[in-house]
Image 1 (cartoon, rainbow, N blue to C red):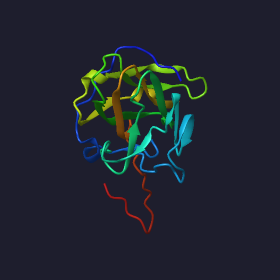
Image 2 (tube, rainbow, N blue to C red; image 1 turned 30 degrees about the horizontal axis):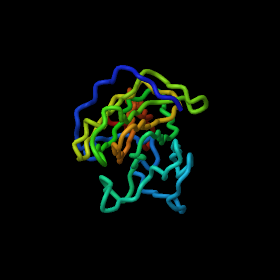
Image 3 (cartoon, rainbow, N blue to C red; image 1 turned 135 degrees about the vertical axis):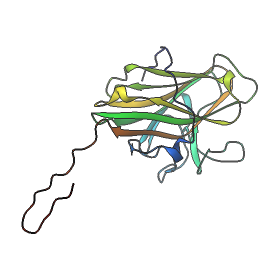
Image 4 (cartoon, rainbow, N blue to C red; image 1 turned 30 degrees about the vertical axis):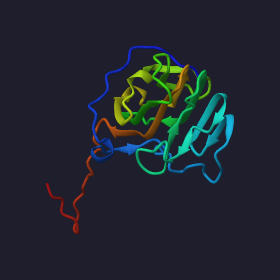
Length: 212
């Protein structure tokens, strides 16, 4: 997969989206609670863990991480914890099929911290890619710098309705030069139809009376 640089879209208002939002969820295991899906934590340059695919350069631990005293998930027992030791690059992604004629909202939680000190060159990015070629799709891209960290979980939500009718990879990636820690949890893409379904028709007969 490739990363791109473009103007960041304006985020929707931060909120406890998991409580307030409704719709059809497109992602599978956006909270990473499937853990290692019967496997164990391993180090490698790439792998597949349930619905999520990932890669590391150089080889490092699977970015799906179980909570411990040094790194806690926002909810549940698992999250994404990218390699914080630079120079390194990591990615995790899932294929998503957007139905046609829907509005869609991408939401996720990020926690920024560091091992030694913030580095302005350390970046976490999110964008959408072609599942076959890895080429960027559309102009959506959001970048977050390690120096922006405040050591607490923050929610970000974006309108991604432009991807309606397409199949793409939702990609999170890091490029680390220093020692910034990027954690992700509770990723969601919710959709709602752009037009209400047609109302049911009623045909009166000897046994049926239509109301309204």
